[in-house]
Structure formats: structure tokens, C-alpha cells
Length: 101
Image 1 (cartoon, rainbow, N blue to C red):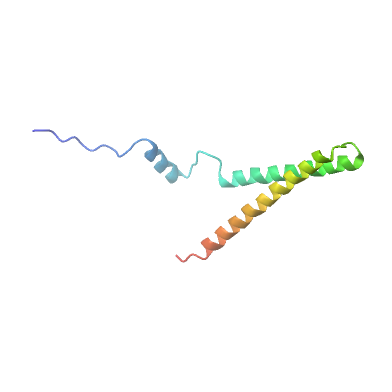
Image 2: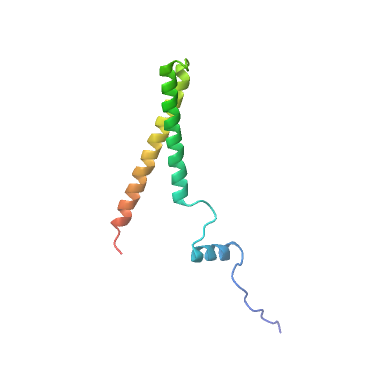
């Protein structure tokens, strides 16, 4: 007769690590809050860079208008993206708050 082996733990690899991560609340990557804070800091830095470029152009230190316009457009694009992310987060929040439990 063949012997029956005992059933061992189900997947000790990635699934067990994921289960313990969920139970302990620890994540391996940056949190959403950290990612959002980093993005906001980057948008602010681009806005400040554009302001400095404009000030330097007005003072005559920069004669290349293209350089200033590039800085301003980068800041504008980053700001628009930040606003779209904000709108999506607010929409998601409203949908979650309207869910019935």
C-alpha cells in the first residue's frame, strides 16, 4: 500500500508573505500619502522654478524666452495633472461615501 503524505502548508512563498503583510499592515513600497506628498512637492518646485525664471527674464538675466516658456508650461502641465488627480480622488471618495453597508 502507498502511504499518504500529510498535507503541508499551502504556498509558503509569496502568498504567506502577502497574508502576513495584510495582517500586520506593513507595505513594501511607499504609501499613497508619501507618493502624493512627493508629487505635491515636485509640483511646488516646478511652480517656484517657473516664478524664478520669470523674475530673471524681467530682470534681464535670461534673454531666452523659450527657456522661460518651457519652465512655465512644465509647471502648468504639472498643476493641471495635480488637479485631475485631486478630482479623481474626490470622485472616488464621494462614491465610497455613498455606498451602503
